[in-house]
Image 1 (cartoon, rainbow, N blue to C red):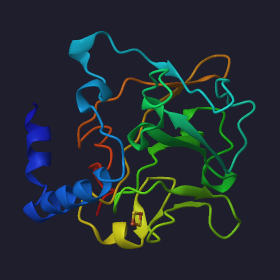
Image 2 (cartoon, rainbow, N blue to C red):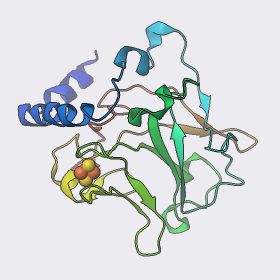
Image 3 (cartoon, rainbow, N blue to C red):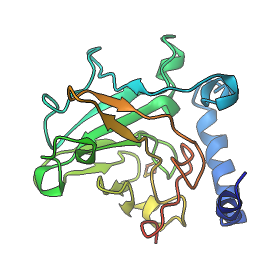
Image 4 (cartoon, helix red, strand yellow):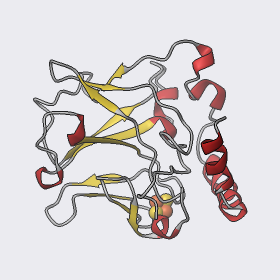
Length: 206
Ligand code: FES
């Protein structure tokens, strides 16, 4: 572990850790057992390569056809096993930002891909494209997420301390034909984040 990552982990307060454990106890009683060892991509288990952003209809997302101010659900990492692929911690939302937020660009900057697991108590949030919203909202207790950054801007997740106020994200790439790809993530707090717990990003959490 790098020095920076170690510092990041030290910033998790005991209170936040206990809260996470409490949340885990609550949620895991309602969700199938998650085999974390199989779930998290590991460099040691083989070479991790970029994978296509596969939409629910089985096609690969493309900047030429993906509407602005629109979101789709993406499963990552996908196993091909119907039950495993329904685990909430594999669910992500890919969002093409509204035009006024930069969504008109024909490159990866127009897109965001965030974990769909709310940072409060792990419900799945939804994207609301309505003119007055254009944001992510959790149906359980009303946490609201800014799609430009993934930061909670209202609701209980907003009041949580960093890193538990910023959604984990996947980094994207667009190829010469406009197809979208997910770059290999590093699931640490200082990089792509930890699903269900959060992410540090300098200048964004605070
Ligand atoms: S679980 Fe999302 S606001 Fe509580």
